[in-house]
Image 1: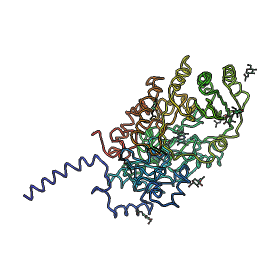
Image 2: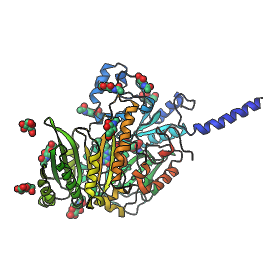
Image 3: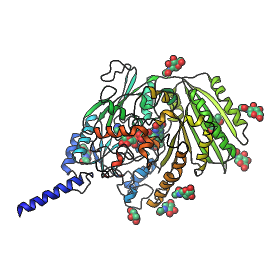
Length: 583
Ligand SMILES: Cc1cc2nc3c(=O)[nH]c(=O)nc-3n(C[C@H](O)[C@H](O)[C@H](O)COP(=O)(O)OP(=O)(O)OC[C@H]3O[C@@H](n4cnc5c(N)ncnc54)[C@H](O)[C@@H]3O)c2cc1C
Ligand SMILES: *[C@@H]1O[C@H](CO)[C@@H](O)[C@H](O)[C@H]1NC(C)=O
Ligand SMILES: *[C@@H]1O[C@H](CO)[C@@H](O)[C@H](O)[C@H]1NC(C)=O
Ligand SMILES: *[C@@H]1O[C@H](CO)[C@@H](O)[C@H](O)[C@H]1NC(C)=O
Ligand SMILES: *[C@@H]1O[C@H](CO)[C@@H](O)[C@H](O)[C@H]1NC(C)=O
Ligand SMILES: *[C@@H]1O[C@H](CO)[C@@H](O)[C@H](O)[C@H]1NC(C)=O
Ligand SMILES: *[C@@H]1O[C@H](CO)[C@@H](O)[C@H](O)[C@H]1NC(C)=O
Ligand SMILES: *[C@@H]1O[C@H](CO)[C@@H](O)[C@H](O)[C@H]1NC(C)=O
Ligand SMILES: *[C@@H]1O[C@H](CO)[C@@H](O)[C@H](O)[C@H]1NC(C)=O
Ligand SMILES: *[C@@H]1O[C@H](CO)[C@@H](O)[C@H](O)[C@H]1NC(C)=O
C-alpha cells in the first residue's frame, strides 16, 4: 500500500513539474519563494529589493495628499522613468485581459497590479543584476528588465514578475583610445555608459567633452537599453549610421548569471544579436561602449507647408516633398517631418507638413538653399499651398539637441499604440512611388491633431554600413529612406472590447494599407511598431530572424528573458507566463 501510494505520488510529481516547468511560478503557488528567500535575495543585493505597487495605488485607496502629488507628475516622463511601479505608457501598466489596472483616471475601481512587477531590484551594480537573474532562474520566475519604461510594445512590464530596474546605473566614462577586449588595436575615441544612462545625460556628458554621439531625440529614453539593442535611430544616422552600428562592446549578464563581454572578438554571436535583435531578449546589458566623433557645425532647414484642410494641393505638396527626399538625403540630410492632415487652427482645420532637416558638418548655407530651390519653386507653383522656409547654422550637433529637442521633458502617461513602416529609397526614386505612398496615407483615418511622423534617419551612412557592419539590424533599414509612424489610443476607462476594436483597426485596416505600398519587401522598426503585429518575426528582422532564433536558443534555452514580440516570444503566451509551443 505504502509503496503504491509513493509510486502514485511519484507519478503525479513527474506529471506536474513537467507541465509547471512550462509555466513561470506565480504567487500563491507552492513554488513561490518564501519570505526568507526574498530576504536572502534582498541581502545579496545589499537591501535594494523593493515590493512594488502601481504608482497610482494611493488614488485608489483614498490617500488624497499622495494622490495629488501623483496627479501633478502623471505626464512627467522623468518622474515615470524613476518609478518601478510605472512605465511611460499606461496601457502597459494594465492587464486588460484580466481586468486589472490601477490608473489615475479610474480611482473608483479596485487597484489591480496589472503588468506591474511584484518586486524590483533597484540595481546599482552588475552583481545586483547577476543575483536577480540567478534568483529568477532558480525559482522559475517571470523576469522583467526595466530601464526608462518607454517601450511601445509592452516589453518592460510583465505580470507577476521580478523586475530588474536599471535606472540608477548612471556611470559614464570616456576613452581616447578604446581597445575592445581581444582587439589588436584601438578603435579610437569612445564612451562607455552604464545601463541606466538616458539620452539627456548622455548628450550633456558627451557635449562637455566636445564630442558627438549617435543617439535619439528624447530626454528620458535610455541610451543603453531597448533603444540601442533594437537599432536606435538618430537624426545623425545619415551622417554616422544607426546608434547600434557604433557599438564597440557590450558587458552583459547572461541567462546563466555570468557577466560576459560581447564584441567582435568575444561572444561575437551575442554581439551580433545585441545590435538590432532587441532589448530584454538575450541578456541584461550592464554597459555599452559607443564610438564618439568630433562635434561639428550643422545647417538646419525648416520648411512649413500648409493648405486649407485636405486641399488637393496638400497631397500634391506631400508627394513633391517625398519625391525630393532621396536627393536631400544623398546630400546628407537627416531629421523629421510632421504631417497633420487636420490641424485645428483659428476655429477651422488646416493641413500642415512641417519639416526639420539637418546637415551635420555642413556650413555652406547658400549651397543648402540651392538644394531646396527646385522643391520650393514646385510648392510655389502649386495652387492653395503656403510654404515658409528658413535655414540656420548651429555651431554643433550638441546645440541642435540642447537648443531644439532636449528641453523641458517628454510628455507621457497616456495610452498609446503605434503603427509604422519603413519605406525604401527605391520606392521614392521610382516615377509613381511617392504618389503611391501618399495615396496609402490618404486612406487612413485621422482625428484633428493626429500626427504622422516621418523620420529621415537612414540612407547615407546607414545604407553604406551594410558593407562593413554585420549585425541583427532589420535589413530593411539599409534600404530605407524614411520611417513613418502614427499613434492610436483609447480612453483609460475603455473596456477590453473597445480596446480590441482599436487594435483591430490598426492591425487589420491601417497596417495592411501601408504594407501594400511595397509588398513584403520592407518591414517595420521593432521599437516603434504595432504592438500587436502578427508577423513580427519577418516585419522586425526579415532574413535575420532564423539566426536570431538560434542564438536565442543557445544563450537562453529556457526562455528566462522573454519580451513581447521579441525573438523567441512566439513560444510563449502573450504575458510570457506559459510556453505554448513545446520544443
Ligand atoms: C519620447 C520618445 C522618443 C523616442 N525617440 C526615439 C528615437 O529618437 N530613436 C529611436 O530609435 N527610438 C526612439 N524611441 C523609441 C525607443 O527606442 C523605445 O521606446 C525603446 O524601447 C526605449 O528603450 P528603453 O531601454 O529606454 O526603455 P524600456 O521600456 O525600459 O526597455 C525597452 C526594452 O529593452 C529592454 N531593456 C532595457 N534595458 C535593458 C538592458 N540593460 N539589457 C537588456 N534589455 C534591456 C526591456 O526589457 C524592454 O524589452 C522613442 C520613444 C519615446 C517614447
Ligand atoms: C530590503 O532591505 C531594505 C533595507 O534593509 C528594506 O528597506 C526593504 O524593505 C527590504 N525589501 C524587502 C522586499 O523586504
Ligand atoms: C519631473 O520629475 C522629475 C523627477 O522626479 C523632477 O525632478 C522634476 O521637477 C519634475 N518636473 C516637473 C515639471 O514637475
Ligand atoms: C472589472 O473590474 C471592475 C472593478 O474593478 C468591475 O466593476 C467590472 O465589472 C469588471 N469587469 C469585468 C468584465 O469583469
Ligand atoms: C567634417 O568634414 C571634414 C571636411 O570634409 C572632415 O575632414 C571631417 O572628418 C568631418 N568631421 C566628422 C566628425 O565627420
Ligand atoms: C482667424 O480668422 C479670422 C476670421 O475668420 C481672421 O480675421 C483672422 O485674421 C484669422 N487669424 C489668423 C491668425 O489667421
Ligand atoms: C513664387 O512665384 C512667384 C510668381 O508666381 C514668384 O514671384 C516668386 O519669386 C516665387 N518664389 C519662389 C520662392 O520661387
Ligand atoms: C514653422 O512652424 C513652427 C511652428 O508653428 C514655427 O515655430 C516656425 O517658426 C515656422 N517656421 C517657419 C520657417 O516659418
Ligand atoms: C469613460 O468615461 C467617460 C467620461 O469620462 C464616459 O463618458 C464613458 O462612458 C466611460 N466609458 C466606459 C466604458 O465606462
Ligand atoms: C475603425 O475604423 C472605422 C473606419 O475605418 C471607423 O469608422 C471606426 O470608428 C474605427 N473604430 C475604432 C474603434 O477606432
